[in-house]
Image (cartoon, rainbow, N blue to C red; front, side):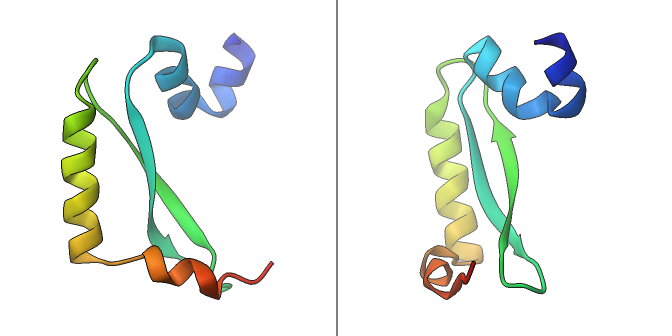
Length: 71
């Protein structure tokens, strides 16, 4: 586990500690692929993540962009 934390420290840290976290696409690269940003909230504060997700979606809608992804 310690070795993995050196490569991917933030996503695993949320999983290990049980903190609520979300990854949302805030940037789309030149190949039209979404790049996510992760947000972590205090324990049992999922409500903060839902509020942030709603604000981000309102400011920069992304849901309809998934149909444009070509692998």
